[in-house]
Structures are given as structure tokens and as C-alpha cells.
Amino acid sequence: MTRAAITADPIDAAGVMARVASDSHGATVLFVGTVRDHNGGQGVSGLDYTAYEAMALDELDRILAEAQDRFAGTAVAAVHRVGTLAPGEISIAVAASHAHRASAFDAARYVIEEVKRRLPVWKREHYLDGTREWVAPGIGAADDDLVPR
Amino acid sequence: MTRAAITADPIDAAGVMARVASDSHGATVLFVGTVRDHNGGQGVSGLDYTAYEAMALDELDRILAEAQDRFAGTAVAAVHRVGTLAPGEISIAVAASHAHRASAFDAARYVIEEVKRRLPVWKREHYLDGTREWVAPGIGAADDDLVPR
Amino acid sequence: MQLTVLLFASYAEALGTARLELTVPERTVVGELVERLRAVAGAGRLPPRPLVAVNRRYAAYDHPLTASDEVAVIPPVAGG
Amino acid sequence: MQLTVLLFASYAEALGTARLELTVPERTVVGELVERLRAVAGAGRLPPRPLVAVNRRYAAYDHPLTASDEVAVIPPVAGG
View 1 (cartoon, helix red, strand yellow):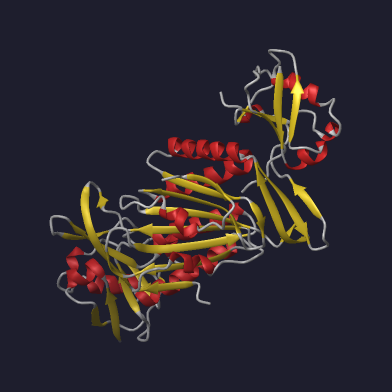
View 2 (cartoon, rainbow over the protein chains, first blue to last red; view 1 turned 90 degrees about the vertical axis):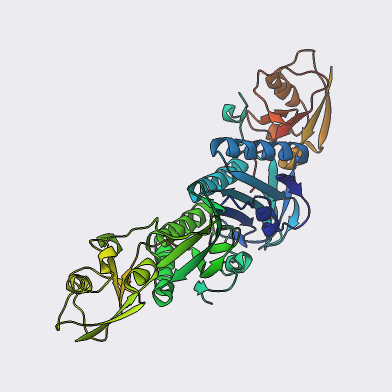
């Protein structure tokens, strides 16, 4: 069972949830990120996600391992999409399950926050006026926090 | 579109998520509660959920309205199951969406915490040894916090 | 006045019914209804201050009742 | 030694390629490689301290490089 994936195919969120299902886990949290039809006041018609795929897969796997370490007993899985997406399409799905809800919430939240911070994935937004632009909310400069100790 | 429901039918978690979908909301959080196969060291073969259905529906609707008030711009929906459930079956699904992830997480968490605290629903666990028992993790005594001001 | 009181789950089992008809004085408040309930067989298993809902909302013990109210005694909840 | 440097997204556009072959002295560290990169046409658009990954992990600027390393310069990320 692969718990981390980078895929060019549409993401099946229910399938990601199914990867963490267990009869001993009473709580499952699913986070789904979808393409918004606007950003910073501009209309968005779609976007391209591109990744350093080999590293993104490794880094996503490391993030999931960290989540399982921090929130003992949690099962986690995550899939990130690459390619051209329309508004409403799923760019990422993260699932976390645990016997109890607090850890399921915390683990899912940890994974998405670290993905936003660290995953080598880039997006170029397509605006309604026909222009396109790389969007970079994440960390740009070398950051010692990102270097494994 | 009904955003709160109490149902005797199996819950379709994807359907609950679909109720909060919007192209302007980039983040959706789904919480799913399922029947665990154990509790406090005892094996559980299933359980009965029973509700004061008319009030549970009203109270769930009030909880969702509170979540939308507290986390402005959030869309929320929730469905609670009643009847006899086997381990692995969904007892509750809560979905919250927002333009940004923090509010989607916070709103989903608020709803499930208030459900656990306030929703007039009871469960009787069936143990592997054939016995059955009402389980009551919630508030038992009159609590002024529960009385609307 | 006549009041209908709904019971659920462990309380319904303790009192042997899901529905009680009680005669109480006009202007009875919730707390007085709870005391009146204690005279019913099986009510010894109620906690000192059980939760009460009036017209599908949790109600304070000083909440006054009228004959048309839907009153329910609410066991410790266990939803989710 | 010869090093292959991978470029992505806005950096690949700025330098006009997704892959650079650079000749650097033995025992070059990440920070020295970044300085060497600045001589390449289009590199003026790199920030003062771009993120660098070595063998698919973020690397510190004092990390020493060998010819078999997979080196990548990482633009500000935008996943999720």
C-alpha cells in the first residue's frame, strides 16, 4: 500500500481515505485542496502544477513518516496532483485516521502545513485575462529549518 | 439543500462533502466517525445509536449555524446515523469548506466537538461476550453552558 | 396542568417507559418537574440534576412550563 | 568535476533550461555552486540564497558535493 503519491491523474479522495481505514480507528479526517476560481482578486481559469517529482515523492513520504511519529498510532496517506487543473479539481488529498479524533485532526493538519512549506511543487495560475504567472506563497530563500539535522 | 440530517440509512461521506463544495472554496475538511471494534479494552461487535430525533436535528442545525458564525465564510454540513451499526460503519460525517484551510479545519473541529457535547444521541455497545451497555462519555448533569442565553 | 415528559435510552429503561403523563401545578418550573419525577417508580436511577430540554432546546431549572411544552429528560449524550 | 544541476518552474524559465552541466572544483560546497551558477545567463533572477536540494533532500550551504550527486535549485514552493 503506497501512502504517498504524486500523480498526473485525477485524485480519488475516497480512495485516499480508504488507505487509512481500520476497524480500530474511530476517527478519520480528510483534507481536500481544490483549485479556486480566484486569487488575490483575480479570476483564475485554471493552473499548471509542476513538481520535482522524485524529490516530491520522497519529501511527501518523509512528511507522512513525521506525522506518524508525532501522533503515535495515526495512519496517514496523501496524494498530490500535477498537470493542468480546472477550478474545482482536486490538487491534494490528505487522510489521517486514529482511534480518537484529536490525533486524526492534528496529523492531517500537520501534513498539509508541511506540504505547503516544503513540497517541491510549483503552480502557474491562468488568469481570465489570458496571462499566466508562477505563484509562490512558500519559502523562497535557503532556510535552515528545511535542512534535515 | 439540507445541511443537517439524522438518518437511519448508511451515510455517504462523499455526498456530505459535496454539499459544501464551491469553486471559490479551496479547502475542504471531512471528519468521519466510524464504529470501533473495541472500547476500554473490551471487544465491540456493534452498537445501537438512538436519538431524540426532532431535537437532535434542531441542535445539529444550531451547531452548524454557530460554526458558520464563528468561522465567517465557511460552508458546513453534517449527518448523524441512528440504528444498529457494525464496526467500520460511519456514525457521523461532518464537512466544512472555506477559501482557506485554517477555517475549514476549525469549523469541522468545532462541529464534532459540539456534537459530542450536546447532541441528544445515545449509544449502546454490544460486547463480544453478548452483553450490552449504554455508553455515556458526555455531560450527564444539568449544565448551564448548554442552556441558550 | 397535564405535561408529557419524553424519556430516552437508559432513562427510558429505568422508568420503564419512553413517555410519562404527569399532573403538575400551573407555572411549574423545570426544577420542580424534576422533583415531581422522582416520585415515579424507577426514577431513583436519575442523577441529582438530569439535563432537561423544553421544546427541543436545553432548558435551565428555573424555566417555567406550560401545558403545550414538549419536555424531555436527556441522559448523558454519546453522539458522534 | 562535472555536476548536473536541475532547474524547475520560474528558475528553469529564467535560465532557459531545466538542466545545466557545470564544471566545478573537487570538494565544492552547495554555497560555492550557487555562486558559480550566477555566471550563467539569466541567473540574475535568482534570489540571494536560493533553496538547494542534494539527492532529493534540502541541503545546507556548507554541504560538500561529489560528482554523482543529484543537485537541484528549488524555487519558492507552492504545493497543496
